[in-house]
Length: 475
Image 1 (cartoon, rainbow, N blue to C red):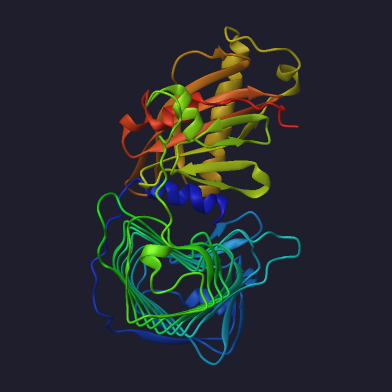
Image 2: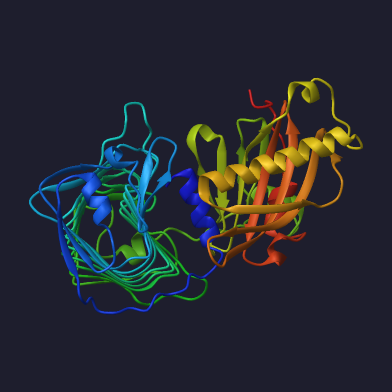
């Protein structure tokens, strides 16, 4: 997942997307196309697009955009972003391949749409030489009525298919192979069926990830030669989802640490197991043990000593470090310049990055908290950060100083509060801390659905309070 995608997705986690009413297709027009430019121009509601055999190199049409098809910039290319569509089918004729040259942007992103089908399409990444692969193939957000039929997703890619806030998705007769970060993830998705498909040679941590999703059926799937951490992880706000099932699936030659990564377990009915690191007795033999954050710490529960032992820490290349709660997911971005940690409930996150380079005349002398130069440096850093997020992700960050600059040990810092918004109705409470460090200003930004999550004594406050120089100073 790209840096900009994760930031935008994280904000989307903080507001429920409005559902579009679902209707049957009527008056659908059919359009035949033979190159990427024709393909993009044809994308519209109530349309069936037939791709003739061949490769549709998206980079050849970066200059083409419509009301329904635009481009989202990645670090080394662009994602084809489709939105506000209804009753659209994209169907291949012969061997039709949609090809991306970007390693750090999804091939296609689909947003806020209804009744969309990808049929007989091959999703292919041919990243430019030297480019990392840090993005998935198909990203789908706030879509009702998705069908992926007779498609293939091949590496190099991270997670082949990512669903967020979707309903009634069907993936069938589809091949997924060679992924590096899992085959499928679904968050806040209800009604997902994966059937008559094959997942092979994939690596995943986990291979399948389900968060606050239910009514999920894996039927007649062959999983072969997959490897990694946990085969499946299920997260839910409370209780067991009770509706995640594998029926008639075949597991062959898969080597993973555990079949299931949490206490929330699926059912496996009429499934076949052969030559795996787990078998039909996986419930007793291959479930990851629950973490025990308070185990024998020797410190009083809730004390700072217990927290420091329980919480992992991260050393940023800038020479600053911070710790974050157990159970939060950490993700680094290109060259480790940016890093994010994400709460398991999807309602809050914190990211850390280089925000601003201090002009030489101000960096030459030490800044004093009471000096107006310090206030200007932090104000310029806040403006630079806001411009960066707006330009790269479409997130509008509006912050105001929360008190005067201050010295925190050897670090000169300033705190800001405000809101982050994106699109229509997506809003998050925001908190930022800027830190002067080696001629730059680093920024730690917290976003949360509820302002109370940003107050003192909370998990986000604990992350902010943990900022400190590393022992080696970033060398």
